[in-house]
Image (cartoon, rainbow, N blue to C red; front, side):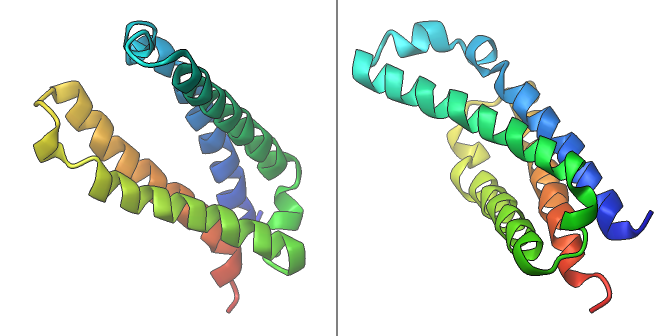
Length: 137
């Protein structure tokens, strides 16, 4: 198995992990009580965005695993899909670093660990989907 295909499969597995993590947000971040503080419309909008983002991760994880061979070529539509997903994770990486500034969040060891774990995860995901585009070039 070549490096690009392994990278895509790894990205697919990690994407399943991201989806699984997102499915825990409601409980982990106390959204039931937090959402009671905002209007019903905003609550429904935020929850809907979150649910469909989780579904997107599941779909993309499935595509990555089922079509790893095609995506690993990095050519045509497969290359565009890989570039788009690599770009998404790279932007998410930058967002994690710039938007979730630790100096603005009360110190919590678990949040600190999560912050650095997410930076690592988003960097790896970006590289996984970039691999087919740089292999053999």
